[in-house]
Image 1 (cartoon, helix red, strand yellow):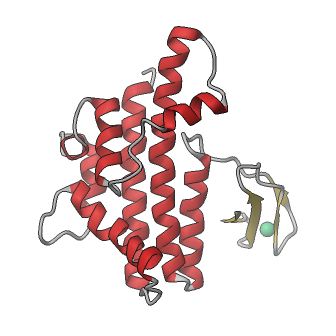
Image 2 (tube, rainbow, N blue to C red):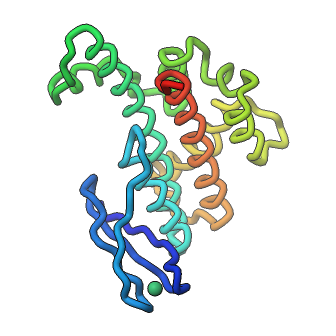
Length: 213
Ligand SMILES: [Zn+2]
């Protein structure tokens, strides 16, 4: 998959970077003053997930709302599985001092709950990282996670995991499984906002478990 990323140049022009898959972004050139510069990927458990988030935002701005929703959901799924594989890799490293190879990761993937949309995988990962369910973790007086969730429109006060299932995963399923392609800009904006909130929560899970400070 191709990814593009835009930033503002100091001259006020637009700098466009592009990359395919997980490869590094090439040199970007300002469309106005032609100055070139490098883009540094954010340090992340999943570079792919971060790039998918950008791509979902780009499709939203292009007006391809259904595609934006599908990609936002894949970003979340990708982040969840990478977190799980990171945990397995760290546990493995602690006993063997070896980094995992692909066949070991393929074996671990069998432990990961493939079904269950958002509900099962998010609880599975949350329990392994924090000992809490996903909802308990989000609402556990953690300012970052509570802020990410409470910033979303939720008039019926639905719990986080159910809310993310209903508002993002079910919306994606309607597109992917039922061929619904008439998503609105509002739905796509909401979905993108949800994907960013979930990834903020997952980043926090990772930070609390592995940060050295
Ligand atoms: Zn410039």
